Amino acid sequence: MSQRSVTATGVERTFGENELIVSKTDLQGRVTYANDVFLRLAGYTEAEILGQPHSLIRHPDMPRAVFKLLWDTIASGKEIFAYVVNMSRNGDHYWVYAHVTPTFGPKGDIIGYHSNRRVPDRDALEKIKPIYELLLREERKHGAKQDQVRASTALLVEYLKKNEKTYDEFVWSLAA
Image 1 (cartoon, rainbow, N blue to C red):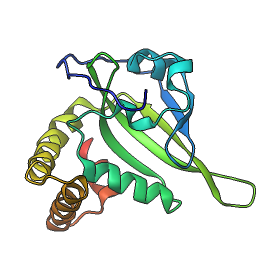
Image 2 (tube, one colour):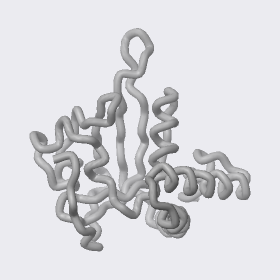
Image 3 (spheres, rainbow, N blue to C red):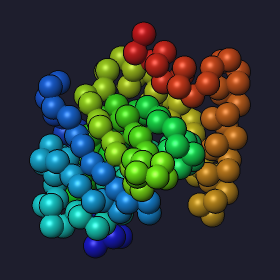
């Protein structure tokens, strides 16, 4: 089930202000745990999602540069916050404010990853969407995935430098 061909419906799903989406993955990004809110929004059963790549819920409108930054950050042992649009099994989408952290084993090594997602600030989404669209336009100029990532990452780095913010500062400033 790891690859799928689903067309985005344009329908947005939402979840409650007091709900949290929780998932855990192994080092390769395969789902090892998903709570009931995750399962409901994504449209999968626990049996269907466990062992599958977390990218199964990747929405095509989510810039590759943001995921590269996310994976590079958590693989280095640091946490990251990000606004992410995911895609449900049927093509609906849902926005989240994600907090992703490495999970450390008893010897201090990274043994997996943990993510909590909350309902995002709607004003922040209106600020992030044009930036994501800019990154996606840059990605679409390139054929190979690695070229897409390289080009949109360079654009994101340039944007942050121009605004004199780190990625964390940028994300936190969106809800201000």
